[in-house]
Amino acid sequence: MKKGILKMVAQEVDNRQILTIPPPYKKDSTPYKQKDFCDITREMCFQYGQDIISELKICKVIIVGDLSVGKTCIINRFCRQIFATGYKATIGVDFDVERFDILNVPFHLQIWDTAGQERFKSIAQSYYRSAHVIIVVFDFTSIATLAHCKKWLEEALDASMDMDPFLFLVGSKIDLVSNAAYNNIEQSAMDYAKKLDMEYWPVSSRTGDNISKLFLRIASLSFDKIISNEKLDSLIPSKPIVFNQKSVDDEKKLIGKCVDAKCKNF
Ligand SMILES: Nc1nc2c(ncn2[C@@H]2O[C@H](COP(=O)(O)OP(=O)(O)OP(=O)(O)O)[C@@H](O)[C@H]2O)c(=O)[nH]1
Ligand SMILES: [Mg+2]
Image (cartoon, rainbow, N blue to C red; front, side, top):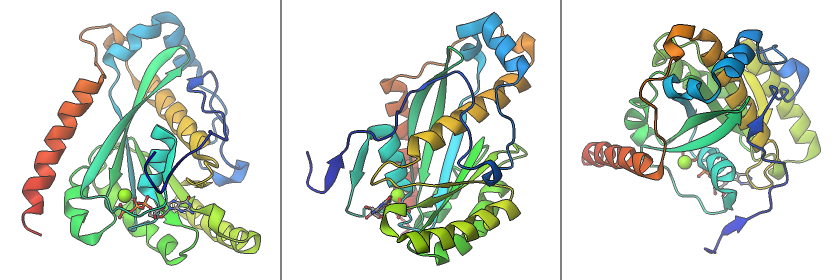
């Protein structure tokens, strides 16, 4: 194991098989009030089962926020169950694909990690387009990062092309603050999220607190929306979307080329 990287036993159950929509962090921390999958989603999954995936669009999730707030660590904690103490800035963008089984239908989130550093912002912004979910991250140990979230959200929404994405405000590094500070910041963050119509979650990538819960909820809400918005006719299987290591690696190579090409200017 590399120095500075802790591989921890997941403290939350990371069960990717979902049969009901997991609850929000708190009842009043979300604008998304539905308690379960809607009838049409259940009906479609029951009738068409695995065939639905053949026509499903990719569910794109983007994570934005100030530099060093912990975006990459959140993804690494969820996708690889690791936590690294050293800081290595993200250059441009990167992504991971994670599989879930929702109502017995395979479903994938494509999770895009973006750079918080100003000089890489223009590269990252070109990947914001058409996101189904926008996660804006702030750092519990740096309250200024919360104030910047509105701007990050507006920039991401500008690129969303009428997708009406789900919006999440995530406070990271809760393991580093005292109870008193935690309570204060949480109240501000919940008020902030409410004003911006976002769902709020506090997390720690170090301990794993709330990380799986957050992504299981994101996957469930997105699945429900995508399935119930689909026309029944369009769900008749044609060519399947194949997610395997090769397709992911090929796409990553493409990103690498874009990032390298644009980086020459820095
Ligand atoms: N204690 C603790 N440290 C954290 C946590 N999350 C991130 N960190 C630390 O914060 C630093 C920055 O984390 P990153 O995930 O790289 O931040 P980032 O937002 O991806 O930064 P950019 O890629 O530059 O935008 C690293 O040193 C991490 O170890 C957490 O939950 N708890
Ligand atoms: Mg990063």
